Image (cartoon, rainbow, N blue to C red; front, side, top):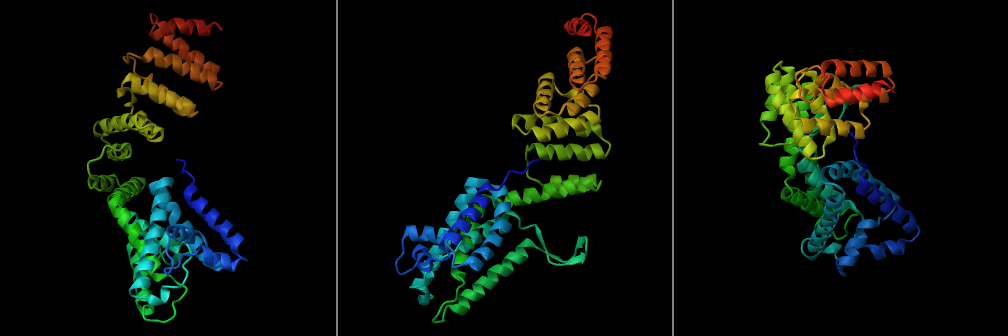
Length: 375
């Protein structure tokens, strides 16, 4: 399955890199673009998210933007990713401004620049959406990771460090170059939006699906079904396909077939051609492809033709034409022959045409086969 490019993440990396390059020799310009609590404005709050104090400052932020931005954008899409990024950046600046008026007055006349508050919002979303993921810390061998911790442990440690830094610095007369309050504000904004957007439930579902797929790859169909049973009621084609695949692996085609048929129909209705084709492949292996209705089969074959997957369509047609009592068999035989011709297999195509004429002599397709055989 093709993974779309993370255009929003790449665009933000590009914009910040260009601005950092342009402002490298203009220290006064960097200050002019920053946010100063003593002179707050929405414009300076926005511009401060796109400028950095220097290359080292930007490179550290770029690393985290690349690491977290790609995952979050694939989960949210470009536009919601951008909304999360900007909202988190503004939330970060809001908390920084509020702390300069209350707990840490030394920040009041200091400029704030950098994308770290907005990036912290991506971390906040990531922490909830992917909390089941593990962070690998060391290698056990050259080809295998060893010690790892759950993602939420790593994020919690980062939050505690930011909180400790903010508290320790609160009473100091001179602030450091690290915007602890901005980091915490951005993180809190991202986490809040993640809660509002249901990221926790989505992350849990994705985790269970990944576990089910891994179990199937390892041949543990029973474990796959147990993972799938923990999912909330859903009509997602991927879930139906995995359930059908698990029952097929357990040797129960009667349980598998209706689930796979449903997976095909729901996937086609949603335009999810890849999952529809995968479910159809498994139905074909079980010799149950003919249990799909004719309109669904026609849609599947058109989709395979559009995706230039003629070899797959030929496998399906070979399965369908094994059943002599299938009402649409003459149509499938004729289509099978035509596809073989297109694949450069005239002898095999002619053999299919002869079978069509012999098995269904009174059909319109047989008459067409006789005409095509004379060419």
